[in-house]
Figure 1 (tube, one colour):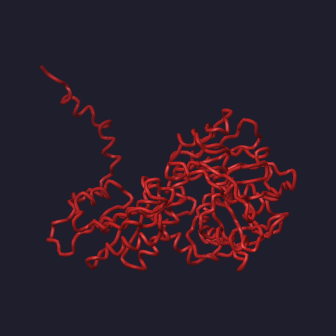
Figure 2 (spheres, rainbow, N blue to C red):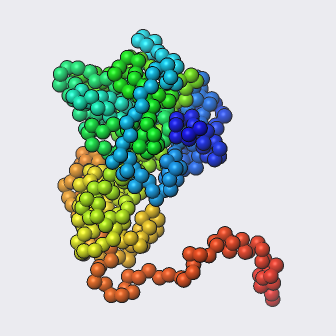
Figure 3 (cartoon, rainbow, N blue to C red):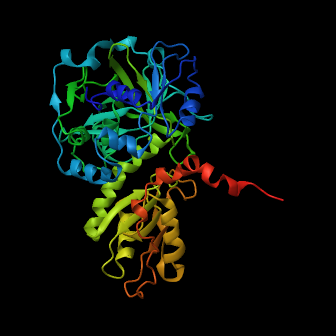
Length: 468
């Protein structure tokens, strides 16, 4: 079976690799699931078949390393950015299938029978979260004007048996909603829960308005993604998803939502937000409920990898010799960007810094290094800052710029940005910045020498005996 066909096929793949922890003990929705997921973060996905009060299992942490996302795409880690760029440029249209062939339509719940917490084990993650939150739901809606679809993820607070409070930032879904609201109309939306990591990753693409992220999913997988029309609204959803909530974002209505633990490891505040009314539910037989714990590696990488691809494209438009970019985990995969480039003209690195700030408002600190620095090795990046940077001439400071409103150090999102030009001056003396090397070292078998203490201990043991 294709490992990225569905959530189930991916979990089967993880099980074969011993990267899936099955937690047999009875667990609580309140904090316990989130706590265990964080303990396993970066090592194994967590599957909970025994949730208090529910027959439905919960899964989280389905891809928590760059290697796992690359594995889902059958590529290496270093190919992630180029693969994503290619998918953005060459989307593959989806393949619509009939309802009877779609696993997600095996069960249908309509009208008054809709009761979110009765059916689904929706967790509470953090101490001061305002309630149960859907955090891995793909929101799919159609542009009221063009009819093109958009896929995105939003935090969704369960506010009633059929009601969700939603944080909808001013991007594509917000634009669709405002078009409908200005006419006094609701916007139909489907919330899709339980898909493979490639589908979730594609949902985070920074694509132009009008480009359907499900077509980016197809391009990443190399085949059309099967979709099915919802039962009660005109929206196409992944046919192999576990659960779909069909509903509408109500016009004019705003209700309290939050606080909720977010990716910067702080709480997003409480305020009045848009409201989604759920009118129907469809799900597979024996569905699996998927959640994402905020600020986990899964959450950070889902935001970081697609942003890297978009930033790489934007920076190459400014300086074509930019080779790669990396949004670091310590910078929440949003705020700290490392850029690798081949500098041909003085001043190019500073242009790259400015282009990075323009590329995405979240970017706060940019470090630009030469192509002899491994940008995925933060020890090397710090070394470049330590030995190739002088603040007097290499620091770029921009004050009063728009950044992330979830960064508590800003004034409602407005703050300062820093750029570090850590590239070697083109007129430097020979050997002045040349990295030291040991000839032949790359060809040495590290494991062989690590095992020498076991194989040759008898030869040298006499040297370890302390004599009077």
